[in-house]
View 1 (cartoon, rainbow, N blue to C red):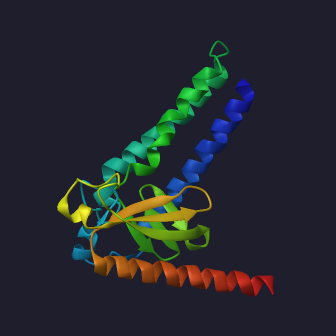
View 2: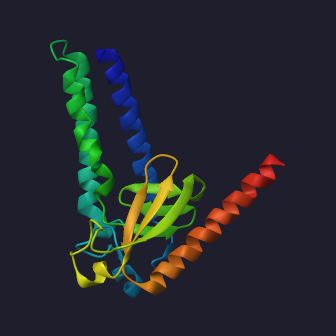
Length: 196
């Protein structure tokens, strides 16, 4: 059991490391949307505050915390493997930091090839569907602010983990709808061509 958990944790850590490197590379690319400060103010990863420009300099603290978390997990995996007295339940505790690691960065942006959301990069071909849900009194984000109350929650279903953001402007909602629809249509057309 301990060996199985060790291998599983190692696979999860390697997966997160590769996704982290991919995110850092994509953060250096040109941002398609939001392209202006006004658009940035109308997109929120969390209801309390607008997203921050996806550059390495603006997210130094989140990047350092994520990096330190990965190093901590690797060190604990090595300690758990070397020390024979540690029970297998110890490994289950190591999965806890990974639960909310995708929300370390306040980022939601479209770049060439996909979407940046928190500490994730989602390729266009990984997106299955998307929908805008109006934020009404029954919605979990209702009541945070007037802008959020009149906005929408964008939910994007992917092959692995879903992503979401809050959009507080009709103009930004239209731009996001167009962007997501165009890229989803292009990917569907390419996959249909490959099937023929």
